[in-house]
Length: 150
Image 1 (cartoon, rainbow, N blue to C red):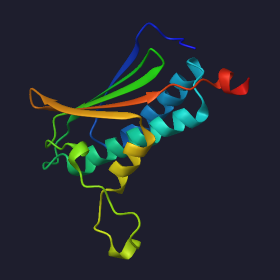
Image 2: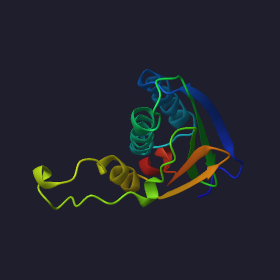
Image 3: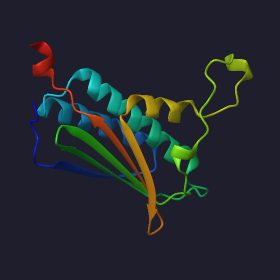
């Protein structure tokens, strides 16, 4: 059942500070309720966005300066679309090596689990750069609470 033919988009511009994330998470919860999305779906997209956002904050900027991160959240044709734009060091998460999760934790190379998690939470990821900006697009099929209750 397709519910959202029209594209619904909310835009945020936040600073590259972890303290900015709770406001985004709160908005995602409201967005989920407004559009009757399942709690599980809202949890998945919030966790994926938190992982990407924290990676940008921790690893994308060599300086200690304040930068702006743009986040666009949309719902179109029953698909949630998150677009994250930043002006940090270019990094394509689609090219990050996958961690060997079968190996004991003590034998693994550090890093990579967060990107692995995002790949598993979302249905599709796309990355590109444009005019000095990293642009990461995350997509997830919308699931609606009222349909799951039926």
